[in-house]
Image (cartoon, one colour):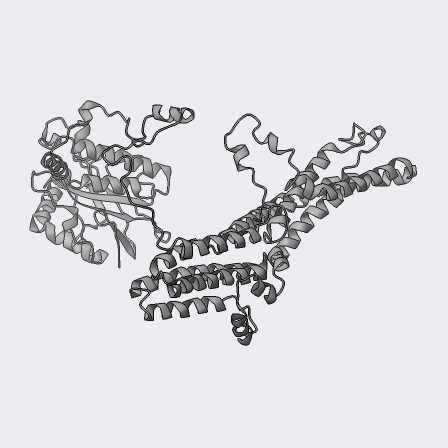
Length: 606
């Protein structure tokens, strides 16, 4: 007589989704929530009814008023108990642990296939080796299941029952009991298995070491699952977690016994306008939350005898029967090899019944982008040489503008005015280099927007009030641009200034003398023009100096000018007739911090 699984299976009843598909499961009794929870439900309702009758018929008026205040208090503070949070995490942990325990049950299917194909010999010796080795594997599984499952232990309460059932011989029992160990000895049959495998290899029944290695690997996997079951049984969910979840549910509904009572409507308490005898929603809440806790209680140890626990006795019977059949009766049992019915068919199509004919009408899935439409003009390949030329032309036309724009866009601005000034300055520079073939500043129209920067354009509003000053040098002559990457920014601030002055050379000194003669402005003897003084025309107060050498960007330097200990001196503008000059003074302080536009690094100098 075969054992029938006790686990409640309803998969076939919900194979297809339909209207109220789960409703047919609500009337089932075996394995249902009604069977698990009805005792607690009746106890809760009985206590609620007893308190309600006592309040209505046995308490005097003054005690009724006190009870009503207590009920309002309990109902108000019952929501502070984090029942949903604690219970939700607890049940999730238990369900994951429940499925992991099922996947840890040792199954002999892989091991029996390797053993049947790897251990050769159709004689009695070969048959004896295969059956004995497979029986040892089944014995190991039986011993571990007997240690963790109450149903299996009731079936095999002693080793004598195991011997009588045929899983162990009397000689094997003597050896098993002769090995003294304070720990569980479920692993001993696995060692016997490995010893027999070594004997079979020496006898030549296992042809090579690779087959022996594969056989032992499958045995180790089988033994590993036995070990996992043992550890799941030894290491439970932490007791404090179980206690917290249980106390949260029980304390909540104990408070609800008083807090959810219907009070006298004549007293005018808020929310107590109706006087009902049966608390319908409180009972539903108890049914859901207490039922949730019962789910965890039933799944925390699936090796018991509940309706939904694992049917371990059925698994023992099934595994022992199929494993013995695989290594004995089916050894070398191969059906006659013949041609299949699609031997000459290059496109075999198994037939369909009338109930499944609709599957043929569905198109075969080719991929999510199979029906994607692309315009025809976008399907043509573009030559890589043309793409490379366009890229090089763009880079050679504006080699430094992209880096400068990135600096202006990415640099943090202390005030909104400074950000707007930098954006306007960037737009002016873009207009300056908009036409690479011609220089707009060479035209006679000095009022042109594109020439305001090169010829002393206006200073953006708020630029002189901010904490940074951007100094850029240009030349009005057409010459080869100097990339920013070729400029060395790795010196100190003073060294950098001297390198710039040396690059200007004697031509700049001569130009300064000529400028002083033309404007009539000279510095006293012994004094030199300060580096921070930049001459600009009064027509347009620009933040940039454009020496008359080249109109191309040579280098840009941004340095903070804020100094909390020095006052910026104001230079009076001398009256020079038609040629008036003014100086935008950028004070220098120590340490100076220079920012490289091209490299993105900062240099600190003294």
